[in-house]
Amino acid sequence: MTDTTTNVPAKKAVAKHELIATEGGEHTSIELATGIRYTDLASGEKFEYMIPGATAGAAMTMLALFGAKTKATNEASRVRNGEGGGTVEQMEAIDEVFTNITSGVWREKAEGGGGTRTDKALLAAVLVELLGDKAVGTVDTYQKRLETDDKYYKAVWASEVKTEYNKRAGKTGPALATLI
Image (cartoon, rainbow, N blue to C red; front, top):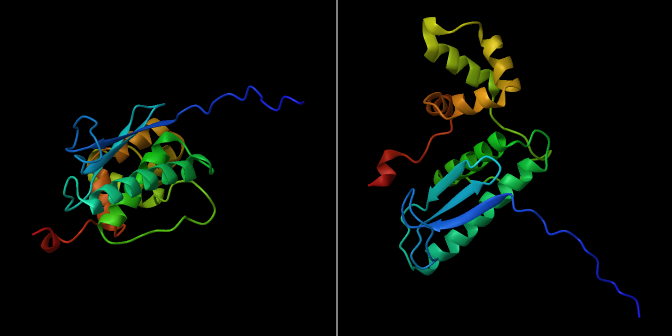
Protein backbone atom coordinates (compact mmCIF):
# COMPACT_ATOMS: atom_id res chain seq x y z
CA MET A 1 0.00 0.00 0.00
CA THR A 2 1.32 3.44 -0.92
CA ASP A 3 0.76 6.45 1.29
CA THR A 4 -0.63 9.15 -0.97
CA THR A 5 -1.05 11.81 1.71
CA THR A 6 1.33 14.72 1.67
CA ASN A 7 1.96 17.59 3.97
CA VAL A 8 0.71 20.29 1.64
CA PRO A 9 0.51 23.57 3.51
CA ALA A 10 -2.94 25.09 3.74
CA LYS A 11 -3.56 28.13 1.58
CA LYS A 12 -3.04 31.33 3.51
CA ALA A 13 -6.15 33.50 3.68
CA VAL A 14 -5.75 36.84 1.95
CA ALA A 15 -9.11 38.36 2.82
CA LYS A 16 -11.87 38.26 5.39
CA HIS A 17 -15.48 38.19 4.18
CA GLU A 18 -18.30 39.35 6.40
CA LEU A 19 -22.03 39.88 6.14
CA ILE A 20 -23.28 43.14 7.63
CA ALA A 21 -26.63 44.76 8.36
CA THR A 22 -25.30 48.35 8.40
CA GLU A 23 -22.25 50.13 7.04
CA GLY A 24 -19.44 49.72 9.55
CA GLY A 25 -21.58 47.26 11.50
CA GLU A 26 -20.62 43.99 13.08
CA HIS A 27 -20.60 40.69 11.23
CA THR A 28 -24.04 39.11 11.31
CA SER A 29 -25.93 36.08 10.01
CA ILE A 30 -27.11 35.88 6.41
CA GLU A 31 -30.73 36.15 7.60
CA LEU A 32 -30.05 39.58 9.12
CA ALA A 33 -27.54 40.94 6.59
CA THR A 34 -28.14 43.42 3.78
CA GLY A 35 -24.52 44.01 2.75
CA ILE A 36 -21.00 42.60 2.60
CA ARG A 37 -17.58 43.61 3.85
CA TYR A 38 -14.36 42.49 2.13
CA THR A 39 -11.22 43.12 4.17
CA ASP A 40 -7.75 42.71 2.67
CA LEU A 41 -5.75 41.00 5.42
CA ALA A 42 -2.37 42.33 4.26
CA SER A 43 -3.36 46.00 4.45
CA GLY A 44 -6.50 45.98 6.58
CA GLU A 45 -8.25 47.98 3.86
CA LYS A 46 -12.00 47.39 3.74
CA PHE A 47 -14.68 47.52 1.07
CA GLU A 48 -18.33 47.52 2.05
CA TYR A 49 -21.35 47.20 -0.18
CA MET A 50 -24.94 47.53 0.95
CA ILE A 51 -27.30 45.89 -1.52
CA PRO A 52 -29.74 48.53 -2.80
CA GLY A 53 -33.31 47.77 -1.76
CA ALA A 54 -32.28 44.69 0.23
CA THR A 55 -34.69 43.24 2.78
CA ALA A 56 -33.04 41.21 5.52
CA GLY A 57 -34.08 37.58 5.41
CA ALA A 58 -35.59 37.73 1.91
CA ALA A 59 -34.48 34.96 -0.43
CA MET A 60 -33.38 37.48 -3.09
CA THR A 61 -31.24 39.32 -0.52
CA MET A 62 -29.56 36.14 0.70
CA LEU A 63 -28.81 35.10 -2.87
CA ALA A 64 -27.51 38.60 -3.63
CA LEU A 65 -25.25 38.48 -0.56
CA PHE A 66 -23.76 35.19 -1.69
CA GLY A 67 -23.25 36.60 -5.17
CA ALA A 68 -21.74 39.85 -3.88
CA LYS A 69 -19.22 37.99 -1.70
CA THR A 70 -18.30 35.79 -4.65
CA LYS A 71 -18.00 38.76 -7.05
CA ALA A 72 -15.73 40.68 -4.63
CA THR A 73 -13.52 37.62 -4.15
CA ASN A 74 -13.34 36.88 -7.86
CA GLU A 75 -12.46 40.47 -8.73
CA ALA A 76 -9.70 40.72 -6.12
CA SER A 77 -8.34 37.37 -7.20
CA ARG A 78 -8.40 38.37 -10.87
CA VAL A 79 -6.35 41.48 -10.15
CA ARG A 80 -4.05 39.81 -7.60
CA ASN A 81 -3.18 37.04 -10.04
CA GLY A 82 -2.65 39.42 -12.96
CA GLU A 83 0.03 41.99 -13.55
CA GLY A 84 0.18 44.89 -11.10
CA GLY A 85 -2.13 43.26 -8.62
CA GLY A 86 -1.35 45.12 -5.40
CA THR A 87 -3.88 45.82 -2.65
CA VAL A 88 -4.72 49.26 -4.01
CA GLU A 89 -5.54 47.86 -7.42
CA GLN A 90 -7.58 45.00 -5.95
CA MET A 91 -9.70 47.29 -3.80
CA GLU A 92 -10.11 49.80 -6.64
CA ALA A 93 -11.26 47.02 -8.97
CA ILE A 94 -13.82 45.76 -6.43
CA ASP A 95 -15.11 49.31 -5.94
CA GLU A 96 -15.40 49.84 -9.70
CA VAL A 97 -17.24 46.55 -10.26
CA PHE A 98 -19.81 47.32 -7.57
CA THR A 99 -20.24 50.92 -8.75
CA ASN A 100 -21.03 49.54 -12.19
CA ILE A 101 -23.37 46.88 -10.82
CA THR A 102 -25.28 49.51 -8.84
CA SER A 103 -25.67 51.40 -12.14
CA GLY A 104 -26.99 48.26 -13.85
CA VAL A 105 -23.78 47.39 -15.72
CA TRP A 106 -22.40 43.87 -15.39
CA ARG A 107 -18.80 43.52 -16.49
CA GLU A 108 -17.46 40.15 -17.40
CA LYS A 109 -13.87 39.24 -16.67
CA ALA A 110 -11.54 41.74 -18.34
CA GLU A 111 -9.32 40.47 -21.12
CA GLY A 112 -5.65 40.24 -20.29
CA GLY A 113 -5.95 39.44 -16.59
CA GLY A 114 -5.51 41.84 -13.74
CA GLY A 115 -4.31 45.33 -13.31
CA THR A 116 -6.02 48.60 -12.78
CA ARG A 117 -8.50 50.10 -15.19
CA THR A 118 -7.98 53.62 -13.92
CA ASP A 119 -6.79 56.07 -16.54
CA LYS A 120 -3.82 57.48 -14.63
CA ALA A 121 -3.42 60.34 -17.13
CA LEU A 122 -7.02 61.42 -16.50
CA LEU A 123 -6.61 60.96 -12.75
CA ALA A 124 -3.47 63.13 -12.84
CA ALA A 125 -5.26 65.81 -14.87
CA VAL A 126 -8.14 65.89 -12.38
CA LEU A 127 -5.68 66.04 -9.49
CA VAL A 128 -3.71 68.94 -11.00
CA GLU A 129 -6.92 70.83 -11.73
CA LEU A 130 -8.24 70.36 -8.19
CA LEU A 131 -4.87 71.31 -6.65
CA GLY A 132 -4.85 74.51 -8.71
CA ASP A 133 -1.90 76.83 -7.83
CA LYS A 134 -0.80 74.34 -5.15
CA ALA A 135 0.13 71.78 -7.83
CA VAL A 136 3.89 71.20 -7.94
CA GLY A 137 4.64 70.00 -11.44
CA THR A 138 2.68 69.08 -14.53
CA VAL A 139 0.07 66.44 -15.28
CA ASP A 140 2.94 64.23 -16.49
CA THR A 141 4.74 64.68 -13.15
CA TYR A 142 1.66 63.60 -11.21
CA GLN A 143 0.89 60.75 -13.62
CA LYS A 144 4.37 59.31 -13.14
CA ARG A 145 4.00 59.57 -9.36
CA LEU A 146 0.59 57.87 -9.47
CA GLU A 147 2.09 55.04 -11.53
CA THR A 148 5.13 54.50 -9.30
CA ASP A 149 4.11 55.43 -5.75
CA ASP A 150 1.38 53.09 -4.46
CA LYS A 151 1.04 54.93 -1.15
CA TYR A 152 0.48 58.25 -2.93
CA TYR A 153 -1.92 56.65 -5.42
CA LYS A 154 -3.91 55.14 -2.55
CA ALA A 155 -4.12 58.53 -0.81
CA VAL A 156 -5.29 60.25 -4.01
CA TRP A 157 -7.83 57.50 -4.71
CA ALA A 158 -9.22 57.83 -1.17
CA SER A 159 -9.76 61.58 -1.58
CA GLU A 160 -12.44 63.68 -3.28
CA VAL A 161 -10.33 63.40 -6.45
CA LYS A 162 -11.88 59.93 -6.96
CA THR A 163 -15.39 61.42 -7.15
CA GLU A 164 -14.41 63.97 -9.78
CA TYR A 165 -12.41 61.35 -11.70
CA ASN A 166 -15.42 59.02 -11.77
CA LYS A 167 -17.61 61.85 -13.14
CA ARG A 168 -15.14 62.63 -15.91
CA ALA A 169 -14.61 58.96 -16.73
CA GLY A 170 -18.38 58.48 -17.00
CA LYS A 171 -18.46 56.18 -13.97
CA THR A 172 -21.42 57.57 -12.10
CA GLY A 173 -23.82 55.89 -9.74
CA PRO A 174 -27.53 55.46 -10.26
CA ALA A 175 -29.56 58.52 -11.26
CA LEU A 176 -31.08 60.39 -8.33
CA ALA A 177 -34.57 59.75 -9.71
CA THR A 178 -34.05 56.00 -9.29
CA LEU A 179 -33.42 56.41 -5.57
CA ILE A 180 -36.90 57.67 -4.71
